[in-house]
Length: 372
Ligand SMILES: [Mg+2]
Image 1 (tube, helix red, strand yellow):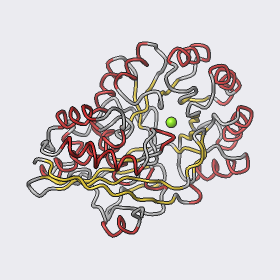
Image 2 (tube, protein in one colour):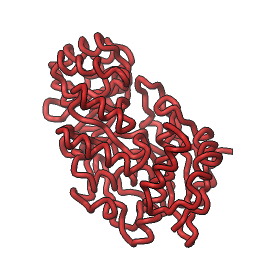
Image 3 (cartoon, helix red, strand yellow):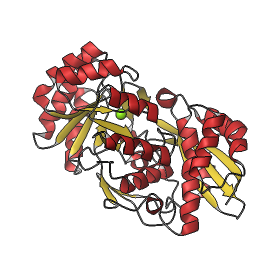
Image 4 (tube, helix red, strand yellow):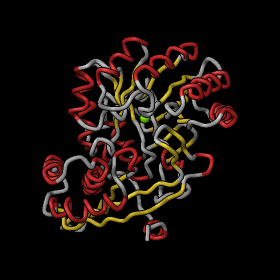
């Protein structure tokens, strides 16, 4: 099962108009993905996806392609696709960072292993510890009041029981938007906010206090990543339940979050964390320190979302029942790459027990959307 070739294919997919996102990181109207196809000496193949956005991880489609073609592929040629520890060792020895590019290769290797064994990836990770149907929250963009009001009502009608509102853009408008959404959804729907690091410490403390009346169940990444002391202060002074997202790409970040007691929960997903194995490692460490984890998203497409779903289903500390996360990426996009897409109905995403990641890639769709 030695790796013999890695093919990289950049594609561009528009978001459905009503799903276009606005956050502290800016607008998200189209998604660039780098698809990765790994081949092995015994004729097997597996697919991975790098969900690249420069404002999130610093990676781009062309950059990830160059890194994989010029640096990572030569590093892993000859590595057994079923030796993920060795694969990670080689990937990390030849390039620092570049989590999404590395995760694309890693998830493709899990796909190969699962297909070879005739088992879904979650079985390889220790077996399902929760049902294959997962409930997500909905992430409502930093829209103007009229659009936020309209969208919030639609989401309640669609069956969402947790709504996340993007903030961190303008403190006055942020507070107004969250209050409007609470008014529209009533008292029984859980409401969370995500600032994507767009507030400073003082603004975060002030806004969270002004939003006490809205009974937020979770405050996600109120301040920029890296300031663990500041995040601990926000948590201490507001009493808010803090979810760290941009603050945690790797195991060292998780150790810092734990050491500074600055969060109640950590948002993880294979792309952001450099692969399924590394995401599992962080989830396990967090669990040992009493910190729950949930699933985050960079608006993955079919393959990336499948990798996330397998990770959730297999990891006991992925408490998506307590803190619903984002597993709806394919539903944001106008086109699916999969002949057998994940079943997404309103807030519910259902994974199948198909071997590997369970996604049959439609090569024609890939070619139609290839970036020239
Ligand atoms: Mg987030």
